[in-house]
Image (cartoon, rainbow, N blue to C red; front, top):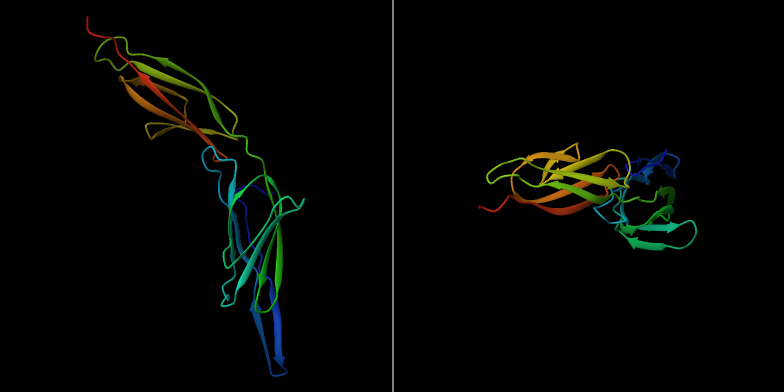
Length: 190
């Protein structure tokens, strides 16, 4: 099963024999193909391709979609940014020996997580810490993780809060996230 964290490892060995008394192996192939996690609120992904070490030669990297809607090639640079959901073919070509290797990868669509509402309870009296915040979210994949001013939580409910400005964030297990700024107030002095 292919998912965003799948790391492919393919090593292909090609035999090169120069004479009857000597036969050596040259390793040229994929060392790692890594699809980086979704960045917050970005529907695109970054693909990093590494080839096996033995590359004193130039390597051409090619990434294309199976439907032909995307094609990009680069010399000696295996990082491809801003890839969207699609089926991809990945090629590496040794420019010196003309050896080629191919792999396939599917990037699934991202269902970004979104904060759809917040429920704020303000502090009831000056100096108290009985404010609270609840976050309601939709979208994303898997379990959610929350933060309030950078402090992590597994719950969307934050209690015992003093009056203050807060930055609330939610993260989906697919890497998408959303953020909202809220203010918990206290009553004015009478």
